[in-house]
Picture 1 (cartoon, helix red, strand yellow):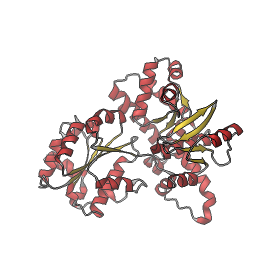
Picture 2 (cartoon, rainbow, N blue to C red; picture 1 turned 60 degrees about the vertical axis):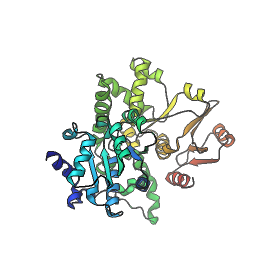
Picture 3 (tube, rainbow, N blue to C red; picture 1 turned 90 degrees about the vertical axis):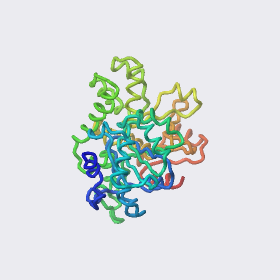
Picture 4 (cartoon, rainbow, N blue to C red; picture 1 turned 30 degrees about the vertical axis):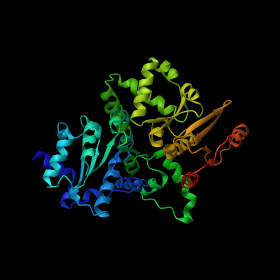
Length: 394
């Protein structure tokens, strides 16, 4: 009875109460997620804490009910980090749910499972559910490392969908800002404000700086220290600040180890932990495998607002480059480094991009390298319109 009550709390739409869904704001990537309904694969939704994974799951659920006319009781949403569910297996949970609503085993159900890695042996349980059929599963996690450990068993049965921070267009929507044609001269000031604020949905809505601090503290304490048994929290915080300081630049494990007076092995572990919870994203140097392995990685912050909160608005060009990276991350870019010169991004599609915010120009040597480097497409990215035109032209 207690389980039934808890599930009804998570799923008010079972009783025609859609109040919790009415204020959800659509994201640009929702259609891509909705397309996943047409295949059998388990969809893993990943990304930074509080980046909007739950919102996207609920928007998808709403689409099922409103557009595809799926019965509300055939859609189950639950968060697996709920204390009341920690000792309930996923298999038992689904069986209880089917029994509760008298759903036959050959009737299709849709499962939306938040923070799936909190479920014990989640990969085995998901495999069993998948293999039995008549179920479409969406599962989220904020920890790529934990997800990676379990996904081997689900090879061929799953797809991964990473949620990124709000883009500029979404930011304006969340802020209820409409820029009319006559006011296009305001674009630049709003865009700079956006680069400074970033794209964490709740922070965009409230502007409360304590939210950012609490978010990063939760990631450090709960997602890194607690899971990996690290007791020196201050050391982790110092490492995090160095990551923010180096965002947009190459990151040397050896140098950081010396600065913090820790071993290179410890520095490497910390770096992997922060990458695993999406705080930073590493970018390898373009070239042969040995060049990639021995060259330092460039790193970019998970969000320009988080970066600004900890480092200040010191370099608009660097903030813009960070934002461009977040927009093209799905294209798996590397960076170019030749004869002491660097170009920002070279994608798997053989597109060469150099970020120059507004009036910035390439140096003569950079221009020469940019022109001589072989690529299918080359573009200087100066503003949001350039990013949009590049992505839509792929």
